[in-house]
Length: 286
Ligand code: HMG
Ligand code: MG
Image (cartoon, rainbow, N blue to C red; front, side, top):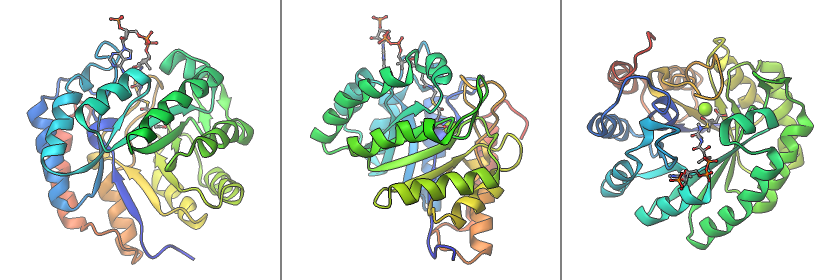
């Protein structure tokens, strides 16, 4: 009924820190990544190749990627457009993430484009990434609700998902960007997606705004999902989604899965020890 094994992808250094108000130095980010690698995380989303004017906290993407290359980490970097991908290719990023919201209002505010415009922009981006043998993680943000338009329909999600599948995304990450999903909706949405796209790999990405991220994870597990994103210390928040707080805390996810006898390759006690350092980088009381 439940999967025997789950992959946890740590997204704290990227999703966790991108919105942090106080400056986090490159050395502090490297130290956080080093500690996460030591705990056993094999895949970490570490940075974003975005304009530093939009996301100043990710201005050191090149340095962080270089460090990840040096330590031989299989890391993911967010590249929202071709310019970002080109910068990522220059430094030899092995895995990229792109994102499109299921809601057009969100896309307008986040990347300044409609859903359709964003999808069109993805075509050359996917082609280029594939030509460089780069693994592509494709996020569908606001896949449950949206702070600007309220409900998000399954059709809106599927409009993006269908294209990501056609374009050949290696994994499709379903984001509860603002943390307003509930377990029933999560179960239904993931079940339908798996029925429609049995060959695709899906990932659950939950924010914990209303303390339902663990419950949502359980619902996704029941729908057959076995890959989840989380951020150490519950770091995070999305600059373009008002009211969104942190991601699901990695230590909570590790604890729940280990108590359920699900293998993750990560020990709870060790993970918990990294959490205070992660929290010390954040201005928010957690
Ligand atoms: P834009 O301003 O529309 O881009 O930004 P543009 O093409 O008009 O370019 C304007 C200027 O930016 C130009 O420079 C470009 O060269 C430069 P200028 O000529 O003015 O000197 N530029 C860049 N420079 C460096 N790197 C780049 C880049 N792109 C353009 N990549 C863009 C378009 C998408 C880049 C912008 O809107 C942006 O960066 N937005 C922020 C996106 C972001 O990081 N959002 C937060 C992440 S999403 C998220 O957290 C959700 C997720 O966690 C999943 C979930 O929770 O559901 C993933
Ligand atoms: Mg997120």
